[in-house]
Image (cartoon, rainbow, N blue to C red; front, top):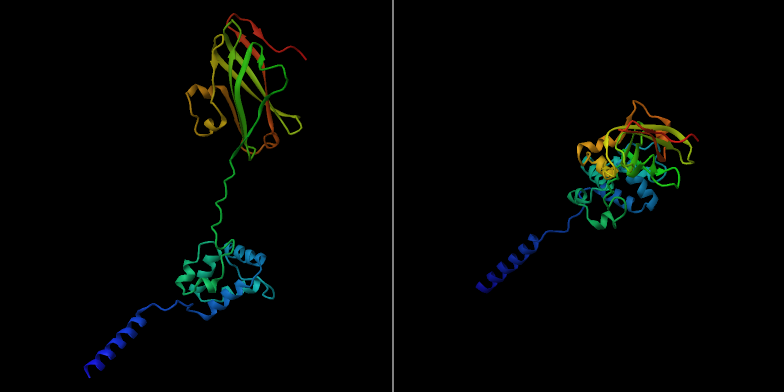
Length: 271
């Protein structure tokens, strides 16, 4: 009798243990299962379109005769939590919301792009675009005993601003006190669009580099370098877009005037 009672207790404990094991989670809503099955049957093009629809606010479709419009309508017809879970998944936020509604991977289907992969973060378009600063001739960078050492040019993509900076040195034995630079902006065919002028005053001794920013990137990062670097830049800002700035593809340079402290003046020869 005791052995029989002990056997019954053991059997009850075994059954209790089996009942304690979590059962396979199933979707709580038959409608959710049906919608997930419908979505599984969509072609990749239709699935991508459905994902785009979800990312665009999931508006009600105008017609439901064809896919993926029918699937859109069926998603909208789901209960609030089921609908939100499906849309979150389609938007690329993972399957956790569907799991929370009781759905499993068999019911959701194999991973499909773009829902099951995070959408790449779009690369922001820079506000500025750098354009080459180039000599107009093959004669070198010395004009009027002023040598261009380096520089850069850039225009805003919206056509409202431009900047040109140059480093230079006076290679004349006489100290210069004023150098005027002209920077023609050119289109893709090399046609002139307009000019920027930098009128630089100071004391420019023989073979002393008068430096500006190392690069456009250093200027863009807040003007890294001594305050005097900005003196070698000409920046033009406009209230509205200008066609020359929108079309500019290259900036050239030329020295237009050099004044020396011995009162002599250099200007380019007449063409």
